[in-house]
Amino acid sequence: MSNNKLTSRQKQAIKTKNKIFNTGVKLIEKYGFDNITMEKISKESSVSIGAIYHYYNSKNEILFDIYKKADDYFEKIVQKDLEGKNSKDGIVSFFSHYGNYINSRGLAFNKELYVTKNKNFVKEDRYMQKLLLDLIISGQKNNEIISNYTPKYISEYLFVLARGTVFHWCLKEGDFDLQERIIEYMKHTSKIFFV
Image (cartoon, rainbow, N blue to C red; front, side, top):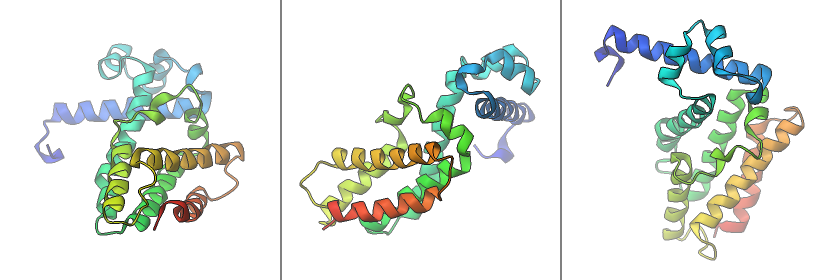
């Protein structure tokens, strides 16, 4: 449904949910995920606690929404950019977008996300993972990617490399260009998997 066809009540609901989400993100960046509560989000956003629980059952759901927004970005933006590219260029482009998206969230926020207790990174049913897997499968069918490894193995390998780079960027306080480094590593790695 386009924004033009929404009722004023629906538009207000979207605005309120975005306000809660943005406040939650800001508080996570400032205080850390474990140090915020729904009550803090309510106070900071000036949205009643009841309204907050209408949109999010817990602060964990705000975190899940971050991943949904990332998947939406990959579905709406990245998928279109990959159309017509060979698998090597597509994979490098995919991870260029990945680095750009992570960078856009900021260093402080990513320091809160890139922790071992966050299992959202390894959920296999996310759009982002499916998009990369499809790219690898297509590359193998077109004899652009070697078939010595399963698409799942290659996908996991590439995500581990990208997440490790982001983790290193967090440890180094963002002292290098994340997107450039991920692209560089993906180009080097392509020599392993590409024909």
